[in-house]
Length: 327
Image 1 (cartoon, rainbow, N blue to C red):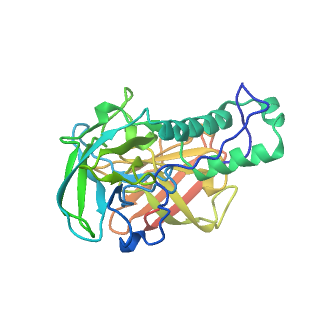
Image 2: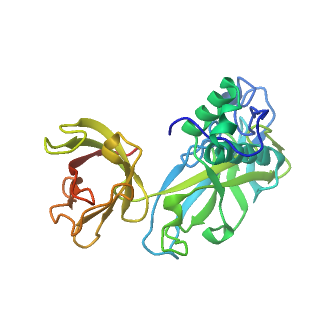
Image 3: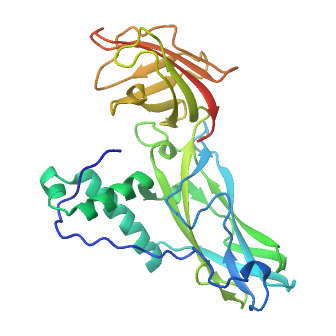
């Protein structure tokens, strides 16, 4: 994303640096559980990153809008000895002041970036412009996870024989195939966040810096990932390219790309699930119809072969994407 943009209520914006709950315990002997009294915490798991809570966890997009993917948040009692079964009470905590500060900061940064006029942006000092640009380029814009897109059967989690390394898991069922009114997969177009906190730990203290997690969720289709990208000698603007690029989810069968991995023009590739035929969209240039039947996805090699022309026939694009791994 390139520089610019800022909203209607500047100049003189003061940007805050937040210390988010859930970052680091202060006791250097924490991992050994020595010389500390037992404390409850939410573990750093594969589904969470409380040190940088704007890092989205990718979940497979389901084809059934009503189906769910089960995921989990791990909880733990930091005790050097086992203390028996302990039940934690967890809850969603949208109104928690720490989460509110974090979430409003995220919304402000993207609101400024997306909605400012050139005059408003220019009115900001260079340091503020750099802080906003760095934030937007390093984070995802977040949306609160609607109640309709997930369910939790039981917010109480029991850790069997708690202490040492034993954990319990809060199970969350997430509807990653849910669609918006236009039939677009919601998890393909949003980074959803849900704040979850320990409310009670069976009488044990709750670690202040690990009491809450900002769980960030984003959908990922089967084609999403890193690719080795080449163009033919016939390709306009950037012939004979050879570079590594990323294709990102834009729907259950749809991928997003910047034109030739170089320009800001949006390009979308839709792969037909039955035929593997690829359809190209590029609103800024247009795409000549009928589209080239050679554009196909090869599931055996995880390769996209794409051939298309600008809407007026003026430019030719011949692209090959070979999958190299997840992003």
